[in-house]
Length: 439
Ligand code: GCO
Ligand code: MG
Image (cartoon, rainbow, N blue to C red):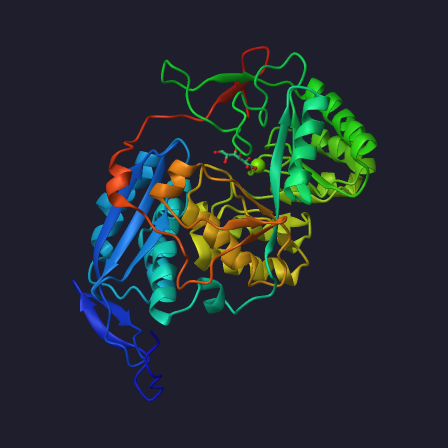
């Protein structure tokens, strides 16, 4: 329901929340709106999710966001409940940027995955409210469609090359045009990307029976010798048309990553993902100097400023922040705009460990920016879809969102209660000598 726009009204009428001036942005002839409640729902329909529900003073108008941080869910839930929710009550939910700035800079201790995930949960709920109030899907608020759908990829994991090939073929039959390929490394147990479960897109799963993280083994040598052979095999078997990519999961040293990217060159990867740890941005220069394999990076970044050095030097081709961990849409559209100026495309992180509202936000942004590249996707199990409905849908290789006001996602609070939180950890990794290794 869009009220008649009354441009003559003042843009920002001031109201006061406990002594702090807050902007009221309802200048469209609509009654002013206030946040009346913030609910934090922790639920485990298949795996843990943290959902944020922001309720407003308009009867029936609420927004739903996702604030899931894999393995640290309760830290985010506590931040939201104990620290952030009290700051939101009474505020105008339409002042999305102001609330973002207030929570980010106002906390003084800014950034970090816990706070940025909490902020993302709020941001998604606020964009959802704004869309519902405007009667428009969020992508319309972001500038409208630039494309019919978001080209997406799924994962193919296998114990050996033939199994990976089967998985890629299966994905192609389903309509995927881009597939990520990971293979078990002989002699290394439980290498990242090759799950014991068969659920595509879910390498980072839950905890063993003792309730503590499992330990995987990693050695760069066998890994770097095996993976180029996998892609040589896949190209021989599958030809050149299918787009293939690979996730190095931040496990290589700079010179190793440079060699690895160079050795993968003949197989024309769509991109090589996250070759280095997020701290070492300058080391990306070494990769660039030695190879033309396209590089993607960023799922462990938490702010726009993490992205700046790689984008402005054009050291990467795809920026793949996790909208759920960089403060969601309000920050992502700035990352995308910065990337556009340097011919870098987006490839937002889209694993199973972020909830449907973040996946929906990914696609709303993807289909409204000019420099979209590709979107990682998952098929949520039925049980997750019942508790948190409205995830974007897969159509012939592309992700699409429903044309409904807001983000299109929701939460069934009653059902969520049936699936209480279960402690779960990501795995950890060590080298053969026992020292800690990036996982
Ligand atoms: C990916 C990611 C995930 C992460 C997971 C950690 O590219 O999809 O690397 O698989 O490992 O999100 O929780
Ligand atoms: Mg990754």
